[in-house]
Image (tube, rainbow, N blue to C red; front, side):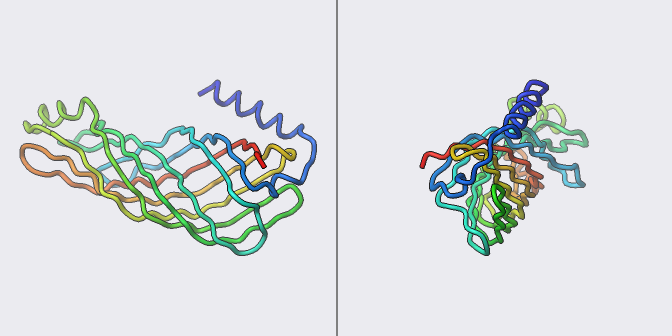
Length: 215
């Protein structure tokens, strides 16, 4: 984590020293890798999703135009989940959330900076993988055999602020700040029946990405 912080600081320093340019927002295809920091807060929900650091691809098609317009996004992420079993938390496993979203927003363009305020919504395909230890927890605490973990698909919503900065005609910096609302149901199948609970998989997401303009 310390190495990641030093690398990110060096990256921002390089961006600050870069010469001015105004062509990145006019590129028709740009791509890169973004580093996402996801955080959440514990609630009264029985199932608790942990935040974390994610690395994923980012790409942009078409030019950035000012004013009102349609926006879209994927924002796929994964969370580790704790579940209260017999009054104590246990590692249930990993939940993958794969939303496909579209929405509407307003974009301001000022020189090398572009800022968009958007509201996105869509449908998420959700899957779950059971941890290697949770079966033992169910057996030792409840005396039942856990055989499977499943997650329901569902709707998601994400308000966001999206910022682009032209470093030069080839490189651009993207910072995206948003809050993803996702509430899938998690079902554990046991020898005693089904244990179904709603997971509050909301995440506050901060994404930072360096993109390269191909054309």
